[in-house]
Image 1 (cartoon, rainbow, N blue to C red):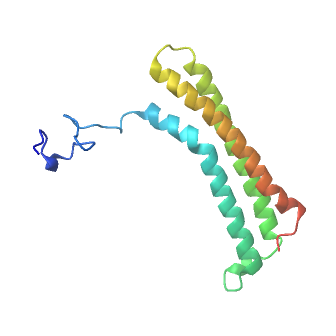
Image 2: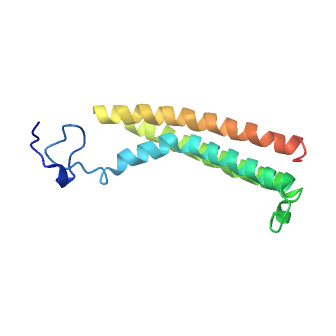
Image 3: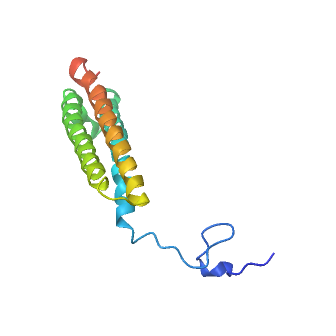
Length: 145
């Protein structure tokens, strides 16, 4: 089986390759679309892991350095992290809504796709904000340990 492109050139993008290198580093709008689309769930996951690890360190940690996480520190950090993450998710949702409204003014297929991803990103970020708040409420209601 012969190939038109030598495999050592590094510009093949699939099994058969393309006749020229494909450079994705210059398409900033595409990267921004994906960052805004996935930003809310990433913030939620980061918040959940941070709150879980702080509560775990404060309640079960027994050693040098972990004394800093003794109660009420887990509750305070949970509240601060919840407020910061909820604000971040709502900011991402607002940015996605603005991007969706701006994309509706153009008639190209690329802008239609970005508009759809922006609307889906707004919904994901809003849902992530609700998930962040629901993760943080037990820190206010129940004791950490």
